[in-house]
Length: 296
Image (spheres, rainbow, N blue to C red):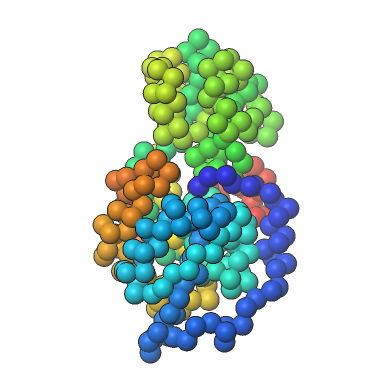
């Protein structure tokens, strides 16, 4: 997900938040199984209602039809704010990325509902052809550009490559969070390597008219964990299961509603059962960089 604000101190807001809405103020159950008549829904890092409606209005309508439940958009500034809103009973359902999910799960006991696969969702590291760098281990003492702290493909994935190569990401090389300027910096020779998603890498090559031989990949990882919908732990377990079953059964309708999002990142996606263990890789990286307490 985009525009992550990886503000560790802000996590205090989650654990210290005490303002909670009274469950008795919620809409009455829509049927005898105590299913809600309305779900308060957001997408992490989409800060405005207008943007939610523009990019995810189709998804909201599709979900309403599939779940036979009204959805209300609740914009939040960051995934930290989304986690706080889940804990204080201001949100029921969130579409989020792998890294954000791990934090939410740890701080709010949010329940994974379904995963959304993302074809070509890989992390990779590339270098300049004239650098003579052919392996991740050779990055020791070098400078590498990444996307931003907390990004699954733009930070955690590339950082795992460093760890697997025996490098300490905190001391063996210099990591620079350059966002969209990372690949241009590599092209200009301002950094020795770039770590990020293969989608951004391929788009940069296409936009700049470059070949893979000019900025070769030295490592490309397996598919990263899925994006996913997470539900408040306050929702009835049988309703969460019902949401999962219906979403998987009606996945064509839901995926179709997402095709225009962020340059088609969900094109070719599938809706699959969510498995918390699939996100252990992210927890391992947080632990390796000294931030394990935030995901436990």
